[in-house]
Length: 56
Image 1 (cartoon, rainbow, N blue to C red):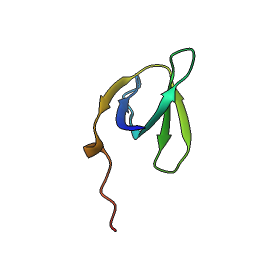
Image 2: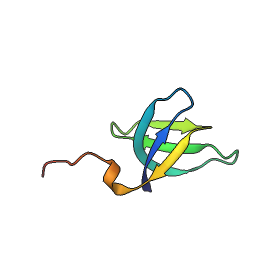
Image 3: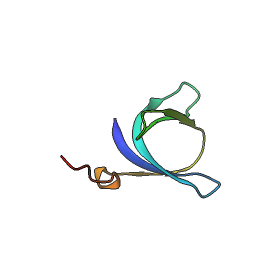
Image 4: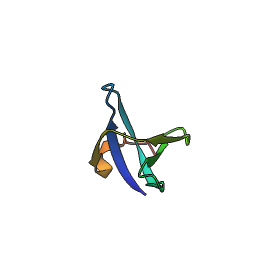
């Protein structure tokens, strides 16, 4: 999946990996803690630079 940032209608910004789109058009987002979130509305921004750097 692609790394995305989603700003919800409540103004909350979520960053994760877009895992797909459900039949009804909702975005499936995998968050950093590996939890899955299904979103029906929000502004989506694409880009791998959105994830925080992880020390190797």
